[in-house]
Image (cartoon, rainbow, N blue to C red):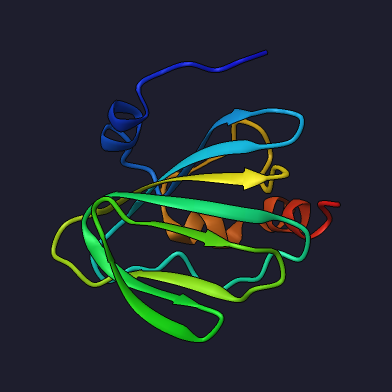
Length: 131
């Protein structure tokens, strides 16, 4: 099964904190809408690499303890085992699409808010058990 859509439209049109839009055998495509003042949340993926593409908004990347500003057009690749967080420091949503390899969330999972994502212990456990 393959996937083909306009990722800019998918990302711009997403109002959910996190929405899994495609899961393959070895990778996963997710769109995110990080509200002003929110963050993705400090995390470390032991066996997953993550590539984040920032479509719009502005924020702060904290990767491996190093802080750098991020904005529209930026990309950040986080290798497995690296602690990271991304914080929206702007006044508008930070729109992101991200690729996980291998998949880090249940296929089709949507979290409307960050609180929903944090309360989904099964999805979090899925990510920790990826090999």
